[in-house]
Image 1 (cartoon, rainbow, N blue to C red):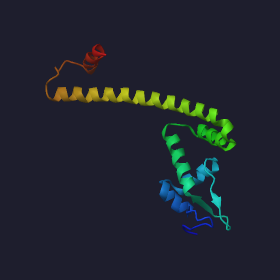
Image 2 (cartoon, rainbow, N blue to C red):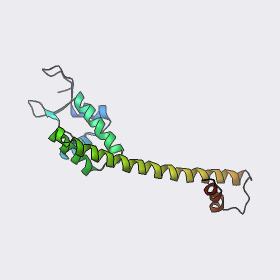
Image 3 (cartoon, rainbow, N blue to C red):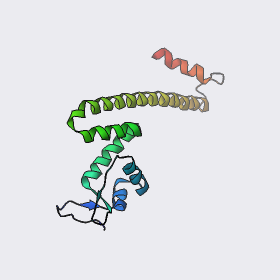
Image 4 (cartoon, one colour):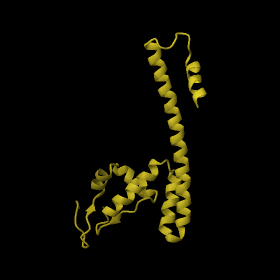
Length: 148
């Protein structure tokens, strides 16, 4: 069955349509299903179908994944979500942990990018003869440590 209107007039998607809509392969969707992250509905012929709510849910899961949340953390979050509002505090605590870790990764990445930018500037200085031939990159970096 292709995109159809169910009896409640909710738009539905086959696995192929859903995969295209969310930008994932059908293989990945089946993997997420096996891991319990998504639960597609089934029609009378036992074929998977997805709804616009599934699009939103998967979008949120992809945001979690994008923060560096591990598969086990995502599974834990999904389990707690299914248990209802009594797990809100646990879910919030997990998200705070993920946020802290993501912020650390962002900070580390910014620092690493800063060093790469300095290296590019050092190369520009060497090419433009504004940095002496005997000045090493380590010496060049010392200029910035004094400013900090």
